[in-house]
Image 1 (cartoon, rainbow, N blue to C red):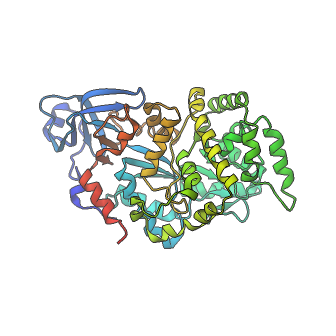
Image 2: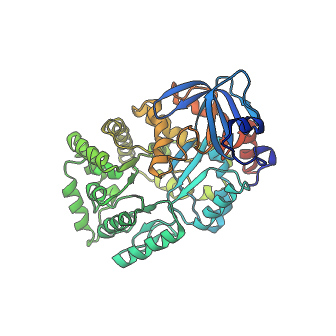
Image 3: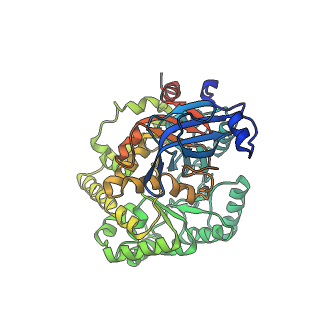
Length: 478
């Protein structure tokens, strides 16, 4: 989606000069004056600051003066709260060529909710994702920065379309060669058919190449094994919970032994035993290992809660549904049918599981494990709306026991560090990308104030609340 010239600022910016006098004469592209800057690293406010932006970068931050520096565009924040743009660390762009445009039209929804960066966790639209990135850098498309894994790595006859199938060491090396040729930002592994050996060997092979890895872990392997091989993050909490069981080894063995039978045990078949054998002491030992090995956790509490409540919730009147293309809505059918077919016992267990997941969050934080906020939004994930779902995730993290500052870290600096981009993003500092959000309320006091977006700056381009409404309106279903 193209955006009008009025959305852009500083398109005729002059070359950067080290001379302060010349800078003041030429002026900046954007100046945001009288803002309370949210320092997400310390959880404190820097009151009454002026942030000066040139060519998409923050060039200067200083105490506000009576008269702001010259600029093409000046925003008087009037005491509002300026924070780094949010990072959604688990989204999907997928559904095949027929849904390429529908996926592209999701991009403004992220910006409208203050999300300036997303991590694409694997799909089948890799060429389109790279094309969107080029268009956004060229100012031809409005949307968040995208870090992508490209195709997932999985086993033979993988569930998700577009996956690279691996089993042997040679196949693993060829798959990693192809991902490096694509210049992906990290490697995503998935557990639909991947073997224990292929999963662990792929992690080790990627580690040798200096590649970041994350994944869904087959229940035939243990999280300790994966972390020790070099796994950088585990997606969702099903795999973490298994590592907290006092009987993890015997459960893992049972799953392995079942593979050659007519009734192989899957994740959901053994989850009741996993939950029943949860041991706080084992959990603490696991979390200490993850902290030591710097293996991060992406909880995705919001989608777990939504799927748990799906059998009892009518989403047909969701206001956000109007911005989801009919083709994407069609992909919801499988999950909806599965939810409606659940027995009362399954529904009760899912609620119990979700409650246990919530209790893990403050313990992980206290143990020093890096938490990354991700929504799991995208096609096939019913009603997990782009943008809004990440805000719901952060509210659940706070509800689970994190402070608002810790939740903000999970959606800003933690993501930037994980993707080795913290020298350019994740905080408001001179020299960093001008990806910031101006809020009407203080998110350090109430995380729900993230929903009160006044202005978004992405790549140095200014989007007012009116601009954002127009962008979202443009992708609304007619």
